[in-house]
Image (spheres, rainbow, N blue to C red):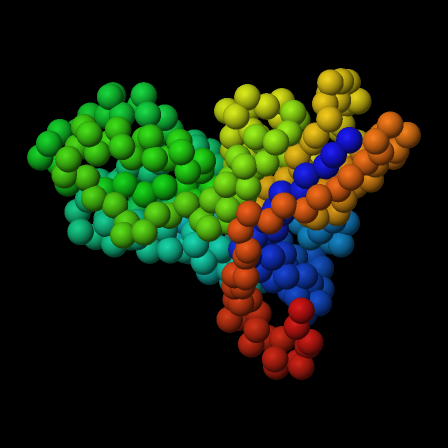
Length: 322
Protein backbone atom coordinates (compact mmCIF):
# COMPACT_ATOMS: atom_id res chain seq x y z
CA UNK A 1 0.00 0.00 0.00
CA UNK A 2 1.33 3.40 -1.03
CA UNK A 3 -0.05 6.48 0.75
CA UNK A 4 0.30 9.90 -0.88
CA UNK A 5 -0.24 12.84 1.48
CA UNK A 6 -1.39 15.98 -0.32
CA UNK A 7 0.31 19.25 0.47
CA UNK A 8 -1.04 21.65 1.34
CA UNK A 9 -3.91 20.16 3.31
CA UNK A 10 -5.86 20.92 6.44
CA UNK A 11 -6.08 24.18 8.35
CA UNK A 12 -5.75 27.40 6.36
CA UNK A 13 -4.72 30.79 7.78
CA UNK A 14 -8.33 31.86 8.33
CA UNK A 15 -9.19 28.71 10.27
CA UNK A 16 -6.00 28.95 12.34
CA UNK A 17 -6.86 32.57 13.18
CA UNK A 18 -10.46 31.75 14.17
CA UNK A 19 -9.45 28.81 16.36
CA UNK A 20 -6.63 30.72 18.07
CA UNK A 21 -9.01 33.65 18.62
CA UNK A 22 -11.48 31.41 20.44
CA UNK A 23 -8.72 29.72 22.45
CA UNK A 24 -7.38 33.13 23.53
CA UNK A 25 -10.87 34.39 24.39
CA UNK A 26 -11.36 31.38 26.69
CA UNK A 27 -8.10 32.19 28.46
CA UNK A 28 -9.07 35.86 28.79
CA UNK A 29 -12.72 35.61 29.76
CA UNK A 30 -13.35 32.04 30.81
CA UNK A 31 -16.47 30.13 29.81
CA UNK A 32 -19.19 30.07 28.79
CA UNK A 33 -18.31 31.88 25.60
CA UNK A 34 -20.95 31.94 22.88
CA UNK A 35 -20.14 31.47 19.19
CA UNK A 36 -22.56 32.47 16.44
CA UNK A 37 -22.72 29.30 14.30
CA UNK A 38 -19.89 26.77 14.25
CA UNK A 39 -16.45 28.37 14.61
CA UNK A 40 -15.43 26.34 11.54
CA UNK A 41 -17.28 23.54 9.77
CA UNK A 42 -15.67 20.57 11.48
CA UNK A 43 -17.37 18.37 14.05
CA UNK A 44 -14.14 17.48 15.89
CA UNK A 45 -13.17 21.13 16.36
CA UNK A 46 -16.70 22.03 17.48
CA UNK A 47 -16.85 19.08 19.89
CA UNK A 48 -13.50 20.01 21.45
CA UNK A 49 -14.65 23.53 22.20
CA UNK A 50 -18.03 22.35 23.51
CA UNK A 51 -16.14 20.17 25.99
CA UNK A 52 -14.29 23.31 27.12
CA UNK A 53 -17.52 25.20 27.80
CA UNK A 54 -18.13 26.99 24.49
CA UNK A 55 -21.79 27.28 23.44
CA UNK A 56 -22.58 27.40 19.72
CA UNK A 57 -25.78 29.29 18.90
CA UNK A 58 -27.82 30.02 15.77
CA UNK A 59 -29.52 33.20 17.02
CA UNK A 60 -27.82 36.12 18.76
CA UNK A 61 -30.58 36.39 21.36
CA UNK A 62 -29.54 32.97 22.67
CA UNK A 63 -26.49 34.70 24.20
CA UNK A 64 -27.33 36.25 27.60
CA UNK A 65 -27.20 40.04 27.80
CA UNK A 66 -23.65 41.20 28.54
CA UNK A 67 -22.00 37.87 27.67
CA UNK A 68 -19.12 37.24 25.26
CA UNK A 69 -20.03 36.38 21.68
CA UNK A 70 -17.61 35.38 18.93
CA UNK A 71 -18.48 35.63 15.23
CA UNK A 72 -17.24 32.59 13.31
CA UNK A 73 -14.76 32.49 10.42
CA UNK A 74 -17.64 32.53 7.89
CA UNK A 75 -18.69 36.11 8.66
CA UNK A 76 -22.03 37.64 9.63
CA UNK A 77 -24.54 40.16 8.33
CA UNK A 78 -24.66 43.70 9.79
CA UNK A 79 -28.03 42.87 11.37
CA UNK A 80 -26.28 40.27 13.54
CA UNK A 81 -23.80 42.90 14.74
CA UNK A 82 -26.67 45.31 15.45
CA UNK A 83 -28.47 42.80 17.66
CA UNK A 84 -25.21 41.99 19.45
CA UNK A 85 -24.72 45.69 20.22
CA UNK A 86 -28.33 45.96 21.38
CA UNK A 87 -27.79 43.11 23.82
CA UNK A 88 -24.55 44.70 25.06
CA UNK A 89 -22.51 41.65 24.14
CA UNK A 90 -18.73 41.64 24.13
CA UNK A 91 -18.42 40.86 20.40
CA UNK A 92 -15.25 39.33 18.99
CA UNK A 93 -14.99 39.14 15.21
CA UNK A 94 -13.11 36.07 13.92
CA UNK A 95 -14.29 36.50 10.31
CA UNK A 96 -11.68 35.33 7.80
CA UNK A 97 -10.13 38.42 6.14
CA UNK A 98 -10.81 36.89 2.72
CA UNK A 99 -14.53 36.75 3.55
CA UNK A 100 -14.37 40.34 4.81
CA UNK A 101 -12.94 41.30 1.42
CA UNK A 102 -16.03 39.87 -0.30
CA UNK A 103 -18.28 41.76 2.15
CA UNK A 104 -16.58 45.04 1.30
CA UNK A 105 -16.98 44.36 -2.41
CA UNK A 106 -20.69 43.63 -1.86
CA UNK A 107 -21.18 46.93 -0.04
CA UNK A 108 -19.30 48.81 -2.79
CA UNK A 109 -21.32 47.33 -5.64
CA UNK A 110 -24.62 47.85 -3.83
CA UNK A 111 -23.81 51.51 -3.17
CA UNK A 112 -23.00 51.95 -6.87
CA UNK A 113 -26.45 50.62 -7.79
CA UNK A 114 -25.48 47.16 -9.05
CA UNK A 115 -27.58 44.06 -8.61
CA UNK A 116 -25.18 41.34 -7.49
CA UNK A 117 -25.10 37.68 -8.49
CA UNK A 118 -23.57 35.68 -5.66
CA UNK A 119 -22.18 32.36 -6.90
CA UNK A 120 -22.48 29.98 -3.97
CA UNK A 121 -24.50 27.41 -2.07
CA UNK A 122 -27.85 28.24 -0.50
CA UNK A 123 -27.89 28.07 3.28
CA UNK A 124 -24.11 28.17 3.73
CA UNK A 125 -23.12 30.46 6.62
CA UNK A 126 -20.78 32.48 4.40
CA UNK A 127 -23.47 33.01 1.77
CA UNK A 128 -25.98 34.17 4.39
CA UNK A 129 -23.47 36.64 5.82
CA UNK A 130 -22.46 38.00 2.42
CA UNK A 131 -26.03 38.49 1.17
CA UNK A 132 -26.81 40.20 4.46
CA UNK A 133 -24.35 42.99 3.63
CA UNK A 134 -26.83 44.42 1.11
CA UNK A 135 -30.30 42.87 1.51
CA UNK A 136 -32.35 43.20 -1.67
CA UNK A 137 -29.30 43.61 -3.90
CA UNK A 138 -28.45 39.90 -4.32
CA UNK A 139 -29.53 36.92 -6.40
CA UNK A 140 -27.95 33.57 -5.53
CA UNK A 141 -26.66 31.54 -8.50
CA UNK A 142 -25.80 27.93 -7.64
CA UNK A 143 -25.30 26.31 -11.06
CA UNK A 144 -24.56 27.27 -14.66
CA UNK A 145 -28.09 26.17 -15.57
CA UNK A 146 -29.52 28.83 -13.24
CA UNK A 147 -28.18 31.57 -15.52
CA UNK A 148 -30.78 31.01 -18.25
CA UNK A 149 -33.60 31.71 -15.79
CA UNK A 150 -32.31 34.99 -14.33
CA UNK A 151 -34.89 37.78 -14.81
CA UNK A 152 -32.48 40.46 -16.01
CA UNK A 153 -31.62 42.09 -19.32
CA UNK A 154 -28.89 43.87 -21.21
CA UNK A 155 -29.69 47.25 -19.67
CA UNK A 156 -29.43 46.13 -16.06
CA UNK A 157 -26.44 47.11 -13.96
CA UNK A 158 -25.01 43.76 -12.85
CA UNK A 159 -22.03 42.48 -10.86
CA UNK A 160 -20.95 39.10 -9.49
CA UNK A 161 -19.16 37.80 -6.40
CA UNK A 162 -18.31 34.26 -5.30
CA UNK A 163 -18.33 32.24 -2.11
CA UNK A 164 -14.67 31.76 -1.14
CA UNK A 165 -14.79 27.95 -0.82
CA UNK A 166 -16.15 26.96 -4.24
CA UNK A 167 -14.63 24.68 -6.82
CA UNK A 168 -12.53 26.91 -9.07
CA UNK A 169 -13.76 25.05 -12.17
CA UNK A 170 -17.43 25.27 -11.19
CA UNK A 171 -17.18 28.97 -10.45
CA UNK A 172 -15.40 29.61 -13.75
CA UNK A 173 -18.14 27.83 -15.68
CA UNK A 174 -20.85 29.90 -14.01
CA UNK A 175 -18.98 33.17 -14.49
CA UNK A 176 -18.43 32.37 -18.18
CA UNK A 177 -22.15 31.65 -18.62
CA UNK A 178 -23.07 34.87 -16.85
CA UNK A 179 -20.73 36.91 -19.04
CA UNK A 180 -22.13 35.30 -22.19
CA UNK A 181 -25.65 36.29 -21.24
CA UNK A 182 -24.80 39.65 -19.65
CA UNK A 183 -21.83 41.27 -21.45
CA UNK A 184 -22.14 44.31 -19.16
CA UNK A 185 -21.39 42.17 -16.08
CA UNK A 186 -18.60 43.40 -13.81
CA UNK A 187 -16.71 41.54 -11.11
CA UNK A 188 -13.93 41.92 -8.56
CA UNK A 189 -10.45 42.71 -9.94
CA UNK A 190 -9.13 39.50 -8.33
CA UNK A 191 -10.77 36.12 -7.96
CA UNK A 192 -12.55 35.75 -4.60
CA UNK A 193 -12.00 32.00 -4.23
CA UNK A 194 -9.43 31.82 -1.46
CA UNK A 195 -5.81 30.81 -1.96
CA UNK A 196 -6.15 27.81 0.37
CA UNK A 197 -9.18 26.46 -1.46
CA UNK A 198 -7.38 26.73 -4.79
CA UNK A 199 -4.18 25.15 -3.49
CA UNK A 200 -5.96 22.19 -1.94
CA UNK A 201 -7.96 21.64 -5.11
CA UNK A 202 -4.82 21.71 -7.25
CA UNK A 203 -3.09 19.21 -4.96
CA UNK A 204 -5.97 16.73 -4.90
CA UNK A 205 -6.38 16.97 -8.68
CA UNK A 206 -2.71 16.09 -9.24
CA UNK A 207 -2.56 13.26 -6.69
CA UNK A 208 -5.85 11.75 -7.87
CA UNK A 209 -4.14 10.90 -11.15
CA UNK A 210 -1.71 8.63 -9.28
CA UNK A 211 -4.13 6.91 -6.89
CA UNK A 212 -7.07 4.53 -7.20
CA UNK A 213 -8.75 5.94 -4.10
CA UNK A 214 -8.83 9.35 -2.39
CA UNK A 215 -9.69 9.99 1.25
CA UNK A 216 -10.75 13.54 2.11
CA UNK A 217 -10.79 14.41 5.80
CA UNK A 218 -13.54 16.88 6.60
CA UNK A 219 -17.13 17.22 7.77
CA UNK A 220 -20.14 16.89 5.51
CA UNK A 221 -21.12 20.55 6.03
CA UNK A 222 -17.69 21.77 4.93
CA UNK A 223 -18.09 23.23 1.44
CA UNK A 224 -14.39 23.18 0.56
CA UNK A 225 -14.06 19.56 1.75
CA UNK A 226 -17.03 18.51 -0.39
CA UNK A 227 -15.39 20.14 -3.41
CA UNK A 228 -12.16 18.16 -2.86
CA UNK A 229 -14.06 14.87 -2.98
CA UNK A 230 -15.96 16.02 -6.07
CA UNK A 231 -12.72 16.91 -7.86
CA UNK A 232 -11.27 13.46 -7.18
CA UNK A 233 -14.42 11.85 -8.59
CA UNK A 234 -14.19 14.07 -11.66
CA UNK A 235 -10.76 12.50 -12.22
CA UNK A 236 -12.51 9.11 -12.25
CA UNK A 237 -11.35 8.08 -8.80
CA UNK A 238 -13.19 6.51 -5.90
CA UNK A 239 -13.35 9.26 -3.24
CA UNK A 240 -14.76 9.39 0.28
CA UNK A 241 -15.33 12.40 2.54
CA UNK A 242 -14.90 11.24 6.13
CA UNK A 243 -14.49 12.85 9.56
CA UNK A 244 -11.97 10.32 10.78
CA UNK A 245 -10.45 6.84 10.56
CA UNK A 246 -13.44 5.34 12.37
CA UNK A 247 -15.50 5.91 9.20
CA UNK A 248 -13.15 3.96 6.91
CA UNK A 249 -14.66 0.86 5.28
CA UNK A 250 -12.08 -1.89 4.60
CA UNK A 251 -14.08 -2.91 1.52
CA UNK A 252 -13.00 0.32 -0.20
CA UNK A 253 -9.46 -1.01 -0.64
CA UNK A 254 -10.08 -4.04 -2.81
CA UNK A 255 -7.88 -3.70 -5.92
CA UNK A 256 -6.34 -0.50 -4.47
CA UNK A 257 -2.56 -0.13 -4.35
CA UNK A 258 -2.25 3.66 -3.93
CA UNK A 259 -4.31 5.94 -1.69
CA UNK A 260 -4.16 9.75 -1.73
CA UNK A 261 -5.14 11.57 1.47
CA UNK A 262 -6.00 15.22 1.84
CA UNK A 263 -7.95 17.35 4.30
CA UNK A 264 -10.30 20.29 3.95
CA UNK A 265 -9.29 23.70 5.28
CA UNK A 266 -11.13 23.15 8.58
CA UNK A 267 -9.97 19.57 9.28
CA UNK A 268 -7.33 18.92 12.00
CA UNK A 269 -4.08 17.25 10.93
CA UNK A 270 -4.53 14.62 13.65
CA UNK A 271 -7.42 13.13 11.64
CA UNK A 272 -5.07 12.64 8.68
CA UNK A 273 -2.48 10.95 10.85
CA UNK A 274 -5.16 8.69 12.34
CA UNK A 275 -5.98 7.49 8.81
CA UNK A 276 -2.32 6.90 8.03
CA UNK A 277 -2.06 4.83 11.21
CA UNK A 278 -5.19 2.84 10.28
CA UNK A 279 -3.84 2.05 6.81
CA UNK A 280 -0.37 1.25 8.13
CA UNK A 281 -1.80 -1.18 10.64
CA UNK A 282 -4.21 -2.71 8.14
CA UNK A 283 -1.63 -3.34 5.40
CA UNK A 284 1.53 -3.84 7.46
CA UNK A 285 1.67 -7.52 6.52
CA UNK A 286 1.05 -7.02 2.80
CA UNK A 287 3.85 -8.29 0.50
CA UNK A 288 5.39 -4.87 -0.14
CA UNK A 289 4.41 -3.25 3.15
CA UNK A 290 3.28 0.37 3.46
CA UNK A 291 5.03 3.50 2.23
CA UNK A 292 4.02 7.09 3.05
CA UNK A 293 5.04 9.93 0.75
CA UNK A 294 4.46 13.66 1.24
CA UNK A 295 3.62 15.47 -2.00
CA UNK A 296 3.78 19.26 -1.70
CA UNK A 297 2.22 20.94 -4.72
CA UNK A 298 2.19 24.49 -3.31
CA UNK A 299 3.97 26.05 -0.34
CA UNK A 300 1.84 28.19 1.98
CA UNK A 301 3.11 30.86 4.38
CA UNK A 302 0.00 33.00 4.84
CA UNK A 303 -0.73 34.25 8.36
CA UNK A 304 -3.65 36.32 9.61
CA UNK A 305 -3.24 38.18 12.94
CA UNK A 306 -5.83 37.77 15.65
CA UNK A 307 -8.60 40.41 15.84
CA UNK A 308 -7.45 43.72 17.27
CA UNK A 309 -9.81 43.51 20.26
CA UNK A 310 -8.30 40.17 21.30
CA UNK A 311 -4.71 41.34 20.82
CA UNK A 312 -5.38 44.49 22.86
CA UNK A 313 -7.09 42.56 25.67
CA UNK A 314 -4.26 40.02 25.79
CA UNK A 315 -1.63 42.76 25.88
CA UNK A 316 -3.44 44.56 28.71
CA UNK A 317 -3.09 41.52 31.00
CA UNK A 318 0.24 40.42 29.50
CA UNK A 319 -1.25 37.15 28.27
CA UNK A 320 1.24 35.25 26.09
CA UNK A 321 -0.03 34.73 22.56
CA UNK A 322 0.27 31.61 20.40
